[in-house]
Length: 104
Image (cartoon, rainbow, N blue to C red; front, side):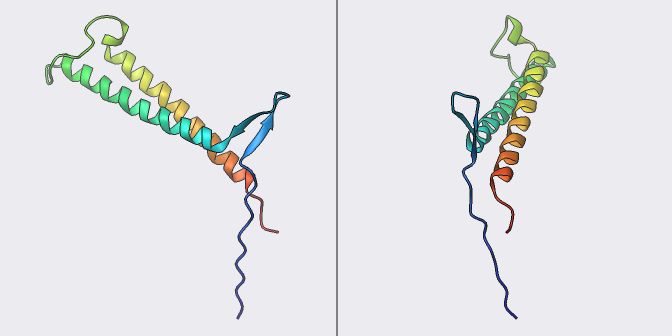
């Protein structure tokens, strides 16, 4: 019995978009998606801190005045950055999958 294993050759991960020749590459979308995901975790941490501060479970929240002093704002930022991060990660994975040629 002979088993042949074929590894596909990798094509460039970018596509040329527009007349300016700007390249949108999967690694950049992957990095941005990861950063947005980390930002969502940071916002969730601040939302939890503000909420527990309101309940008297933790010390005083660092931001005491203004728009960012409310836990609802931090939760909204969490959801927004999380959605953007997930979308960017999906775009990166789709572009990576599209750039790998199928088996011959």
